Length: 236
Length: 236
DNA sequence: CTTCGTCTGATTGTCCGACAACCTACCTGT
DNA sequence: ACAGGTAGGTTGTCGGACAATCAGACGAAG
Image (cartoon, rainbow over all chains, first blue to last red; front, side, top):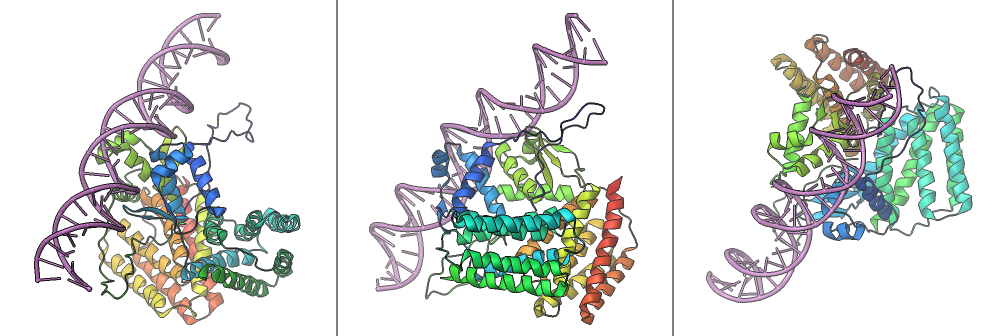
């Protein structure tokens, strides 16, 4: 499980003034490669099933093959790529069974989240509301399916965060990555974005109502609905 | 999320006889290195905090540094090692907050599992019972804390498997890895093994009873108890 | 016509050696 | 005690090399 990637903890020297909030992000070549590839994957530039050749990537990115290799390994461990021995990595493709599996997993995580609503941290609850507003704003701005999906999934991630476990959030993030990848290529009209936002508002109000059972059935229906449209988009 | 590591799917040529059950495990050097390191970590040969030097590992394992590097990256992504830029990787150390986080995550997964008991697959239910028996047998055999912990956690994994999601099981496995690592070094007497087995039998019987709420509180208490003893062992 | 061996080209898996970037620790002068 | 500089060790990245393996083509044998 990718634990919260902490970057570096300075030695806690005693008695000296500390500027804890200051940080200088250290970006390795591998990290940048991973990010570039992830970007391309989510943008749909690489369709599922496409083989990724190491040397081609290497001089396309202007980095060494060994570095590409490490980046590919990490993305494969993350589930975005599939490695086949001596045949290379291909962009991961989700079949309907995989989609079902992912949705099951999401249901477990988000159900745990909404169940924890009452006992959750105030900040966490606030984050849920804030994420919904970002999502709504993004829908109003109408700036393409990519950012919209991002804010949408970010909202769901705040639900998982209600559990208070950073590891569960990391897991949810990985699951969301798989879905974004699977949906990157399809021409996703789905329902009107405003309708979607309204549905999420409804969901949140049920959660806030305090009726735990109602909240659970709401999230369950919500995800079942998601599986339907995603599976249809992927199934083709 | 480490997806179910499928090894290789032969091309589905049509009309020819297939021997689906046959498989030949392909073991790369990196895999073996990962396995060896994992083994050593779980056995407590490398204490948390210990730095792992790449060259030393390389000629200790008799492989190239680049290969070691890849293995270390994978284990770091798994959470067993922590990589600090330009300072190398160290064996991950869990502080009480981490333990709490892991237990929270486990609770979400296992609670989802026991909630799914009634609607779960028959095989999955059978697997739970079988795992409990393996655990009991291991306790009777009294063959050291390592195998005992393994069968113990395997039982809990079957609970997660009740959800029907392989990805959740993979997540649970990663979480268990972190715990095994944290507990590897401590001299773990804990309570009598037989007592522990009895407690798990009790837990299963509550789950089987069909009283979902009782089952959830049972698993919750069980894990709270676990956090207590683990945190105490790690705390110092 | 199908099946089997062989060959060829391409790609991955692993190794080795090199060097710059960077960190830690010591050492020195004040 | 403190600032600053120096030296050694370790990682991050690179490039090249070679064996192992795979996919496809080609031809021989049944």
